Image 1 (cartoon, one colour):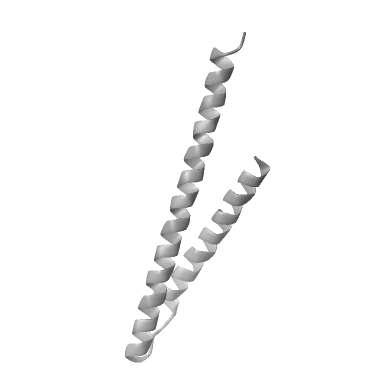
Image 2: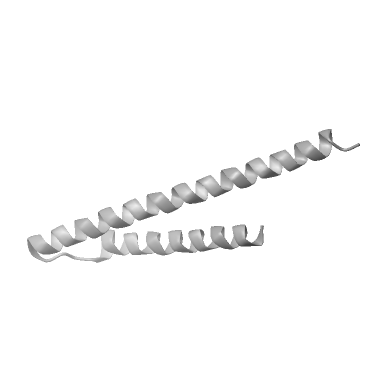
Length: 81
């Protein structure tokens, strides 16, 4: 369980860093010329894809954790003899 929490923490830290980087590329970075615009859009697409993948992993881990907790509660209530 400790390893699980560490993995989730690492995913959440990476998610936060990606959000900050995405905000920089969307608001602060000013492209110059067509190559700059193309490079910026490529970077934005990559960041958005990576962020979506990480959020999907976090959601999966959260649902597995919740399922395990529900099962433990059910087991304690129904299988205690």
